Image 1 (cartoon, rainbow, N blue to C red):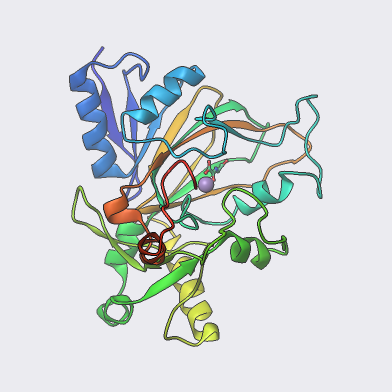
Image 2: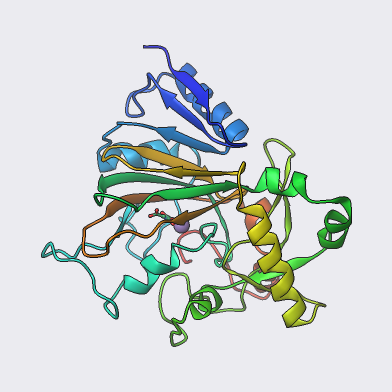
Length: 301
Ligand code: OGA
Ligand code: MN
């Protein structure tokens, strides 16, 4: 079996076929890693990975971000289905997080250490809708005019799950759980330089909300404007899932968003998240906190 890598008709993304992610040779893994750097989003149709295989695949890219305090929870459900088979209703636990995922975002930008990549597989899909959209922030940066590039070159924004959920009407008490910062919100530059490719990208999304040195109204206008500009063709791809498909994205240079569907139907996805590199992806604010005795590691996030 010879892997085939077919670039998508958008500025990012490639479909990889003729490969079994659960049984890759070293040469095949090298191809996958190179393709990940080049294309930022990889789609592997019909893999039907076991949980163990999905975790093992994710671990090839780096350390796992543990999404719960449970050290065994290396993969989590992104799902509206409850253990009894019924689906979560508005107001029930988890519903608001799923609706939040429908806004353009990058995973864990609201954590002290942002995520490198995420691997998502489809288990149960609704009869229509429920696609996952991805957008290329490398091309978005390249497409900015020089004035805007100059304007944002040295700007940073805070990232907060409290803020992004509040924007869509869901306010939560402090200390609400995973992802809700307990120290100050992380501060991240608007322009990210990729450690493997050297390419610049826009680092924005729904969690970004305030720019030091700028009036809050002006910052909102700037961030909203950039987001709208960035998440447009030819930079976007919408994946209509089949159970067994696997898609992964580079959180450092893409955004993603779940698409709506009939919320009375179950949609069950399995998610593994690879931690960022502390040298690149630890927020400046978190470094300050580390200097003051707080040590953000992947296991205490
Ligand atoms: C995620 C996510 C979107 C989706 O897995 O991080 O945002 O389509 N998923 O479920
Ligand atoms: Mn996400």
